[in-house]
Image 1: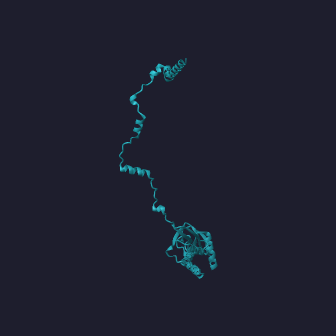
Image 2: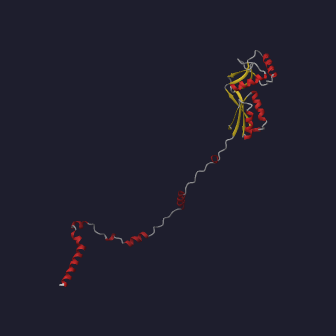
Image 3: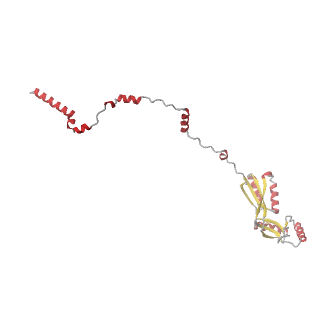
Length: 246
């Protein structure tokens, strides 16, 4: 009885094994199995052979020296553009001291002040013209004899800065005692003449080109500038400034 039992168990195990191994194929649709692509044995590659093929080195490729140099140049960063010497070291703009504008006796007095500084070639003058201005003058006289008489009176009063208008017209034989850029400057000069005893002079607008002089001092150090500013106090109507030389 026990032997039959043992053989029975073995038979059951064999059937169970067979079912697990081939049962899925027995249950599958025959048409589906037939549709599966056949295996191609000639295309099967073993894993060892595939690994060996990948490990084989690639054949060497010839590279020219110029190609290597080009690759190195492309890899290196381009040098920064170099500024020209003119841009890297721009010239320093020189500064000049400008003092003016003068005419007549004021011009002579300012020139005398500056000559004491012994500036040499650093001191220059430039002429400036204006379409109009103001002048201190004596009205036109009747004839040349009266002109000479009036000039004598001026000299006796110590007035040596004058100009007789010679051009034909309404101002012929008028005596100019000075021209000025502003009316205030002309009035100030007239006041000084009155103190000297000049009584008939007056201030008027001059509708003609008037020429004035401006002093220019190059490379004026602080000491020179300070001295010129001291001179300016005696010429309150003058302008003093530091600016670019031109």
